[in-house]
Length: 332
Image (cartoon, rainbow, N blue to C red):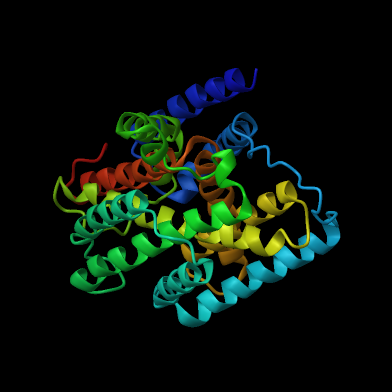
């Protein structure tokens, strides 16, 4: 039944959003009214279909006190938002340093297959970052940063998942490392297919506007950069680290849910103008609910490559539409 509900809403959302786009709509005011209720229902259906993993309760786990867990989670989220506001984009250098510190703290031997795979993904993200003229950093520095972000963040994330015991339940696993390249490729394609309505929603709500750097047909392939790097530092690292913290005050299942929410809304906040005004908070809630949470649950349940495929497709479609707008090919 869950799958049937999701597929039905997936078909409805895809048809409605595609029709709206063919009408030339690509701004929030015109696209939001009919799209948001459908997108919210679709997101709920996805999470219902792909619930968080069944984290087994250990005998020595603390009792979950919901009020305390809520206050602690909210405090951590507000602290992350404040730090992000103060430091801005250079915060990414702190993320790199944190990942290295976590690796040193874990004192786990480096798995050579994990390291080689992380390095390969980092190189792809670095090459994809070069055409992103609109990035906050110079192109060569931005490309180099992908190497310094992806490798330690992936390795630290996998290491913390092992420490929390969730790796044994296949949470956040790499399909390539566990099942081979065919499974990884299949997962990435499945992620892109699952994410089709969200990808159409993105330009419909204005996500393709103000992307003047997308002036060549190949530039949308730069979506490989966020599809890989943001999954590494925005999901693979923070969710396990938050779980490690919150697990001390709640059972694993509750702590994991709280970790997903904190990491998701923090990552959404990074995609706003920041600050604590009403418009920023509304944008954070909308981006977090409609985009960050679906990708996170896809990652938890279907693996890293599936989440990367979902994430890549969101930005790829957004930038394809931006290219069409910039070159006058958009629907009139």
